[in-house]
Length: 219
Length: 245
Image (cartoon, rainbow over all chains, first blue to last red; front, side, top):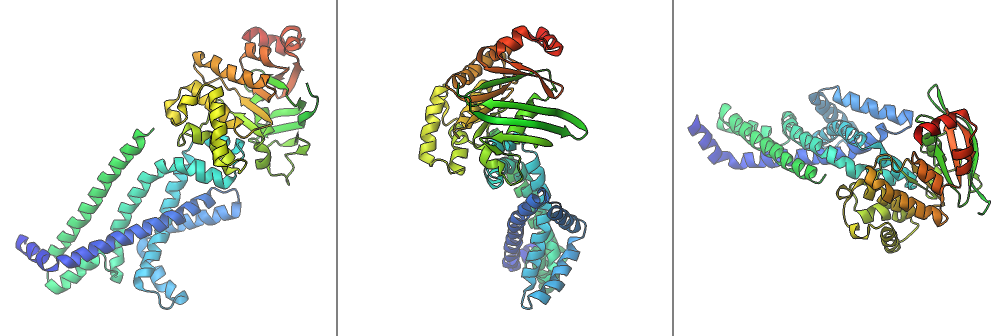
């Protein structure tokens, strides 16, 4: 077993490395775009307009209430009707962004609502516009509340990209499948891939703790 | 004293749900006047003050500021708030900005001043309240009294026509109160129109042109400090003042 693992690593390390690269950038793009979209949705969700508010709420509930595998299939089957030449990878990326945006929206909303209401009142009393109040007063303070949740979301995304391997998008689980069918061994490459996942997620969560401590030290 | 009205409050009502907090307020604040609002907790003093710059939206009535009813649906309250500075009980300074940035944020974003002019003005104002050596500090390094003086300077930086103070010394340690009151007094003396909700009766008596005594959502008694503090006939005012003085 150990021998096999060493042999596989020796022969296929490049495949795993490419898989790792794909996993990281897919998750990163999904979280970054998801954060931008999620922030907008959070703002709409907190707006006074009842119609747009309910649309945002339905969006969040539908995405959080259905499995991500279903969402992958939905976009993979549905998007080609609108964009006939769309690649599997792009469909998967879009599905991940949309999925991420719903979770991020709730983090952002909680982070914004945790900012003391006196801050908004002070900004209002100075005659700032709603846009400036949000951008210059509320969001900079909310970020401290939101950042840890976003870090978590990134870790979740890294793991969820694995589900996208059913479409062979090139991330770590796809690497596992590739190695499996070439080396005629399943358990060994799976253990390798599992180990890689663990290293990334543990490193990230440790890094997050350090960042959090830094943020709180500034209080 | 110039007799030009700055703020006219006409038949102002405010409900919180079923509860009527303001039951028809009619008053005028003239330019350069210093008005103190006193009264027991829950009488509506803070709500009245917050209705003046629409932090609370009144249920009915008018607030006429410089001739415009700012409660009119077609009027943008943002424009009028720029001319009405407000100082809060809990300071509400911006913790993520330095002292200087706290002050220059609004004038620069509202495009009433260039960054350089706003910084120049901020430095002058900070010197007046004795915070010139805190320019680059962050609020977490300031005491309560210093935060409140910063909040006053922040409001002054917009060159307001009137300053509204909502219990400015209520959350300060006793030894900090005097310094803040002195800053308010120095502004009042220089002709800044000022409305203060306060429990500092000595201060009210000293600086006010007029005192409003509020009780259960109405202004039950109003007049000069001498009239209200020494010669009131209103039984609730007598009771309140006997408890507090």
